[in-house]
Length: 273
Image (cartoon, rainbow, N blue to C red; front, side):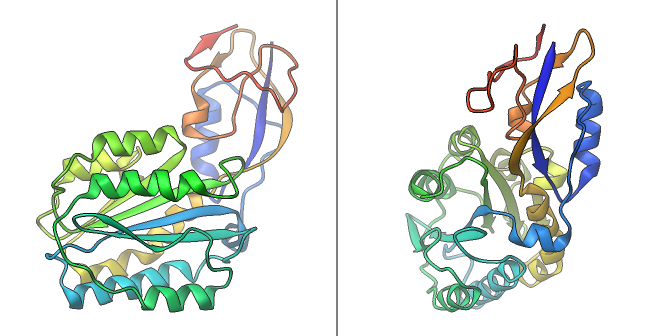
């Protein structure tokens, strides 16, 4: 049997090498991004910000500065990173449409002009809104573009988050969850985030502390920027296992035979051939 795998560009090779070894694949050529390469890799990146009463004006200003600092490490534009921002309380509000700004300068100005809204905390509705109205309407589509959402909240949601998060993941969205303060629930953050939780869940004691995790979050976002580039043949052992790699690494496929890259067969479950 022959396996085919899309060439994947990552910032960190460790996890990919481990997964390939576990799944008995050999890949002839894998490139890894430098920090500068990660900066320019295409990505749809959406920040989902808690704007409820518990945040308060002063802390929301800290969030805005954090937001600016987070995005300055990426090159903004149609061919690079497109950023969207949703603020939510009782209802989600689209503060910055995905891809509206094509320069870092214009994006930063828009972020600085976001006004704190106040209200209750409906995180699930905000995740669903972002999935449907931002990622769902992205002009670039999902092919070859990483879709990443970062949820920042300081309290327990007043609606269900798990179904909304699972629906987002089914559409290829990678979810990070950042909890601020003692009112957040670890279980709820895990409902929101992708796995492993050590990569996608963060907790800090207060809003002043979010500045301390900027570099860590940047690196994790960089690792999430997976770029489908081209197809290379990879050899398999005689009884190969084709797991659901598309969940872990979007773009990996196994083929029953020499199907073209335009029409690959994706195995929904582990399967021997």
